[in-house]
Length: 467
Ligand SMILES: Nc1ncnc2c1ncn2[C@@H]1O[C@H](COP(=O)(O)OP(=O)(O)OP(=O)(O)O)[C@@H](O)[C@H]1O
Image (cartoon, rainbow, N blue to C red; front, side):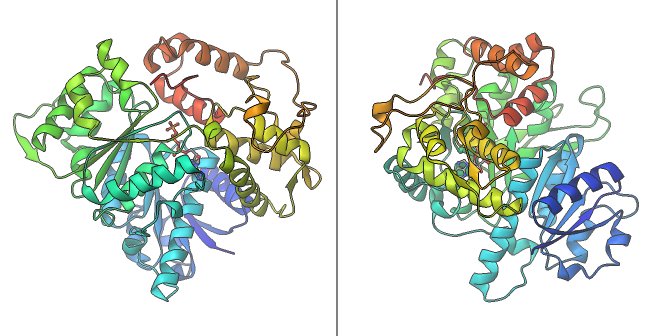
């Protein structure tokens, strides 16, 4: 059973993370500070998860004190930059608070998997934080699953493009695996040992995007008490993944264009430029080309980004893969929750194959996690999958090898509209004509919480890709 140490001074967060990880089957210890952590034999842990800001020494100190154990740094949004610096010090990953449970569990599983792959390759059980960063397995299939023809084509393209250093635009509906593809492109490139900095342009408040990306000088704006390094500079030597690039405001688009054209950045409030060597990876679920026509996205920037394009197909077009993925997720969730013998009923299999999966792989993962939690027997039924949300199904004729009339029993009916249903309906109905900012304004929430809710509910950002 993998051993994990949590270093966090806030009691509530510490016990929540502890509970979540224990529940997922890990052997968990905790400490309130670096000093307290040292009372444990640090080399006996497979992973250390540490808050950045702690009383006494900062969380990054754990990297030095436990050189053979990967360290995952937790940080509040405001200290994202320090997280980036901690990556440079050798932290394997960082996660911004607030994070949701799935995000944390997925990250922990990925780090531990990476650690054991490298240990196996090294023939040793020890791994340094730095080498854990170099997941360089030469196959995208080790990072994301895909056996069907369309995914095999994506993998072939990734294998060809990854080593080149070319700018890549990753397109695909929400939840199709764009971020995983970016990871594969980075890890299969010569930059694999340098940081991959991921920035979600939709989750950062609009007013902060520029200073986040480009950094700022002291006094550049109210509140800029000290000069700060931007995320692009922090990714120097490595790759920068700009997720939801379509949400980048106009000003930031112009600055980004300059980075791509001239390989240099200028901090907000500065007159001087600094040279940077960063590989750009960008992703969007929106039709950027159409956005250039409506003036929402700069055409020159679009062409700079669109040097190579990787299109991740929606899950409904990966018929051969859906059930295998579903079974993999069920096995993983079942193992985490101490229910290793779970299986899908025949009806559940048909439901999974017929569902349109508008939220793609994320929706599938979420549905299976939910069903695993709720299941009291060993059989997952359609009712537990609860896939009635959008009421759309793949026509029977398109479901491979299925000639029977599917049994829709247990799919549930449209009940009363809950707040979450309202949120989902509103977003689905309006997202084609509204930007994320407008949607958030209409719903009376921030862009960040709009983004968080989309993740939590596993809902797509667009009904059709439109591209
Ligand atoms: N091919 C795959 N194999 C295994 N897991 C996958 C695959 N594709 C996606 N996932 C999982 O599905 C979830 C969503 O993937 P990811 O975040 O990469 O999608 P995305 O397209 O970047 O989503 P968004 O547009 O919302 O940012 C993640 O938990 C990821 O691990």
